[in-house]
Length: 339
Image (cartoon, rainbow, N blue to C red; front, side, top):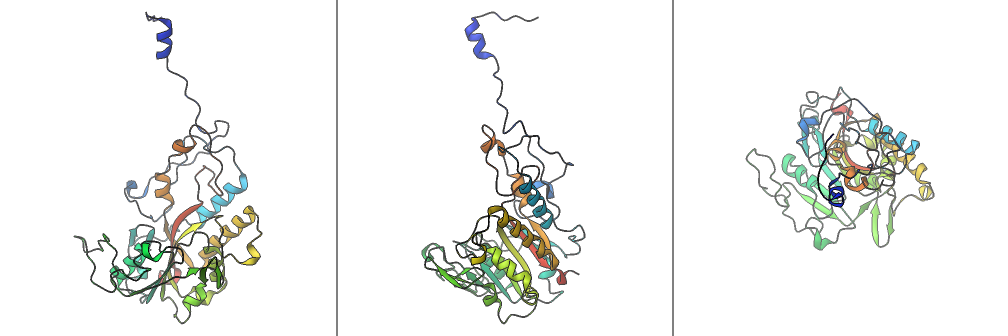
């Protein structure tokens, strides 16, 4: 036995206090096989290959809803690149920001794209700058939300079709807004119908693809929930779909859209999410998924910061291990460019 001398009241203050259980201790966290981050987790960009998404050390939510985790697992499967889509098969991968590009789409082995369409650019559109600087492909930019005075591309004041700075490796430096091929911009948003809502003009992907030939368009979509009507139309129209060489997009499950088609306005959240997951799965009939930001988002997820003292509410859609897949970026390449 060990004894300590001193004032009992003061000694009591020094006793270690029992830590409160983190999250919801009543719900066990499903375990899974260990995995390793791509490139030892150094890249802060989108990454190729099967995402490594280890479970947290505690269950971070107040409860667990089976249909939400089921949809989450289906989503993960839909955005996990196939094992056979190796870097060698793609020629190489190019990783930057929200993109994982299969370079077979850009190296001329299957022709070249002739236009980049970027929907949702905000103040700056790195995707469009990169396409023009690295590949000299002209781009069209679309956004109806950002005020022109806050966005040089939308106000048409950004350097256009010029020589842009490169780093010591000869890659685009991207330290300032610069377009290395011609760009044009439009105060228009993307939706599944041509409509004006709250003074904002929306137009369709069909209208923007008109006149372009097969495998000619590099497409980027980041439209905060308006993507679903657009993607559903795309997969229902294979001749239009086949115009797309690459697709880079940020997806938003359960966000909704001011310009949503009338027939989808009254869906329950579960019906909405089930529809959206089905659309993600259908993209795989003509596209290969090349990578996503899921792994880097997991690497930066610290549930103890927000859900440690008190369990959080459940996100709209999440994996069986608790990781939310509500919003992330994902990249695709048309199968004909690889097969």
